[in-house]
Image 1 (spheres, one colour):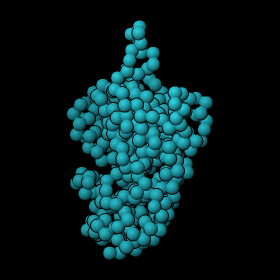
Image 2 (tube, one colour):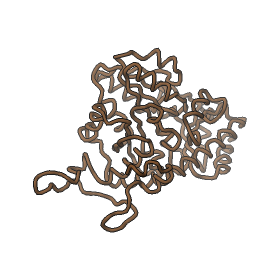
Image 3 (cartoon, rainbow, N blue to C red):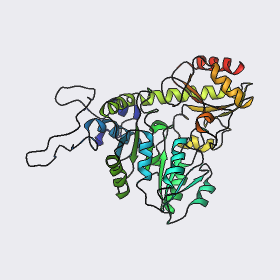
Length: 381
């Protein structure tokens, strides 16, 4: 609904763009469980939907809302963040050169190195928080995709999206950005020059730790996007109708949750920076964090709800700290209403760039004093 694109993110999210149901007057979008749809008498499909692997009215609610929040022209929902991300890489041609970050979501990095390379893609991992390193890695006419993640999990490194978009386009490459942590509430990569933005919708978009989903939004519906869209139905990584409904329900509170988590994370980062048992705090909102000025420019309204700490005493102290928390939950994932803590090196393995003394913190919606006190007790042992 084009006339609603000028609304603030809070207004867009609260109303989901779905409008009132014309038949019942319901103000909450319904679940559309049907897998197949009736043809018209003349054998056409004028109502748009043919089969739920490609189209379902329930998908459109969350996809159109996310596209509106990102300032894009179309959004697609997938069964997971990995399904969304890999759909982009599968739209490339064998032999294409791809630049991706050295610090990024570990499962996608492993897929790029183990699987994408076997399919003929040339994957080069680069320090994407370093503009000079990105510029040096680009091969005009050969590099077809630059993939960024900003802030990058779990060291929260910041890449300059606008500057890298200019470099990529000059070399004839597209730029795709994993903006899972920033969300469109804090950063809108398409408006900074990116071509595609990706989300693990499992995280902040849903926000309640009860859906696995992924999403893509494009700035332009071109031939490359058509191949990406074809991978959705062709490979079959589609989201179920109930999961799509849960996703749009979670997105209705996205602005409030993201801003609250960001405020809490900043307070914790500042307090933990003075803690005698914390060797370092990694958080883009701290003035001494690398590329803080870039983060301040491209993240509006906060620096996200994710931070990491390096614990004095090394790996043993970090693991022992995680064992002693009571309020924080020891669990993988992020972006839910509950706060999670995890020793990332144990998950990612020996090939990971994550220091062994690092704990990743996903700040939820609890009182900051309660979260700090619990972590303080755990750190002091």
